[in-house]
Length: 424
Image 1 (cartoon, rainbow, N blue to C red):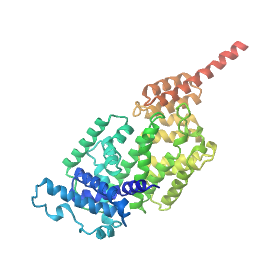
Image 2 (image 1 turned 90 degrees about the horizontal axis):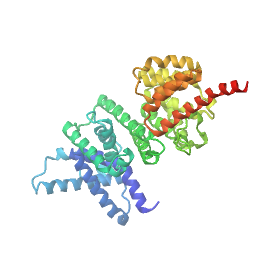
Image 3 (image 1 turned 180 degrees about the vertical axis):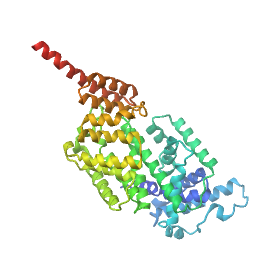
Image 4 (image 1 turned 30 degrees about the horizontal axis):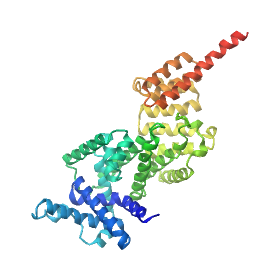
């Protein structure tokens, strides 16, 4: 690794910790970000000449804090500074900063930073954009490219989100145990939203949006380092790893969707799967099941099957049943119906999803599954109607192409009897 690459990696790794501390000092996202950027510039000038500091995060916090205080002085035109407890609760010594990096107080800094980014006043798209900018350090251009919008539009989105956060008057005191638990759940949900933004892309967008999946994995690992005994964070990290491991096999050379049972499993990332499986096993040993653990356990069963026919659909059905109890949702029931179709047949699965049509009338995957089940039952015309509805609701060209493939198959199958009649 080159010297510049090492510095870039060190700064990127330290960013959440440093931004969390600077935000606590200055109570303002823009001020914290400016202080961090100035500290990074000084690191680029200082570290190549003087060598890396003992603790890069502590160095950046110390330098960023002093830089921010200098900026306050300049803006105030030498006016007296606010009281010390309004802008800092650490001593000036870098060594004291370093001693506190691994403590619960420092952990709360990072958690607070993540929680502020996923403030409930913000729409999900703004939560993700702010987290990617503030916590992950992606440029506005990179975030705009991932969201497939213009750079100026993304800049406005982030600016509006920051203004909302400022107006919300978010408290900066250390959260108590109950609030910390609530915040952790909100942060985990935000990380999974980031992952799904990248994972739900089509083949044409995959290269642009893959960084979202990778960043979500990095953030999940960060949470896991902060909360090493929390089984739901283990489950979240395992889930994103196991899902992302399948990415190389999700589209064929023509950019069309490849269903899980048809994917070339040798393309799956074995390294990610092994890490994810180890986390699933570790989480489940705590015997405190939660939604992320259950979803990760389902993904693990798929990952452990060397061939599609080796998949333990009975266990997947049971796990989806447990997930229905934890998070009742028509989408969870729809996913469970896939397992039911493998275990008890398409008729049982169809009976399960038909009552959901009213609530899922605008959901592409409902009509795709319904069409597939009807096709298995030999009800071709009804399947065609369902597939036509799915095409109308398709979010991407790949989804529409996948449904058209089923329609083409229906047409070929319906043509066979006519050919047989002609032969006779």
